[in-house]
Amino acid sequence: MMAFLVEEKLALPPPVLERRRSQSPLNLRPKSPGADDATIVTVKGFFYEEIDEQRAVGPMAAYCFMTGFLNAVCFSGIFAWCASQTGNTIQLSIALGRLLDDEPDLAFRIADRLALTSLLSFVAGGFIGRLGKRVGYSTRIWMACGTLIQTLFTMAATIAIWKSKALSYGPMTSGPVWTTPLAFLGYGFMSASMGLQGVMAKRFNTQFSTSVVLTSIWCELISEPELFHLRRWVVERDHKLLTIGFMLLGGFAGRCLIDEIGSVFTLAIATGLRLIISGWWLMIPKKIERKFDGEEDEPFSK
Image (cartoon, rainbow, N blue to C red):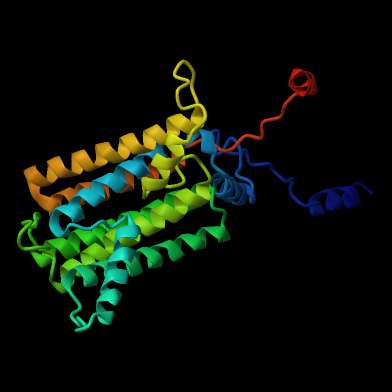
């Protein structure tokens, strides 16, 4: 009997020893398999959040600054605007009208070619802005990436103008000095960046919705009912004033820089500014649904 018990004890498997985990900080809490997925979901949710329009005054004002800045560069060289397409459209209509003269003028002048280049490029850039519908026009990822595309357009314009060796100023007596194919290409990239900016600003739905033209802003400002209520903040009026002010500031800064460093380096600075605005969109807080208490709204209903 004793021999049987001894034999059975010897036949038992060895005891299982539990290995203690290392007490290093990296192994205190084992990483769960879904941690990476959760991180990806959190980052994706951050980029797809809608931006609060009321707290995006800074980058929208910077948009207006860029309009004046780039317009100063192209107007100094060709006496035309890359952002305002009213003049380019009328320029083309006048060119068509010359065909009906008693002696039709069939010449496709340099000013007509510049107007057509700007208009087509502006429209092409605007169509790129329609891509924001896929992710949401007010999402953080679209405002940042859309502005980054504007940055790439501006950088391409810088390289094209640099390679064209075009002058920064056009004498009033001789007309435009951006006459080479590379100069036309640079002007087209500038117009495309303005078209994309204009559509993005319009779809963002703020008082800065017309960040590329001022005619409608001046009309809306003059007709503003609370124009002379100077003792309090009026969003509709004051944002229009900011639009005008920052466009003027951008044009002034662009003209001063051209005089000091030339159009190529001024466009390089514009590229850097657009890149900063692109990153700026990532810091704008998300939209918060504002709920009103019924008791607080009661005085307004009476």
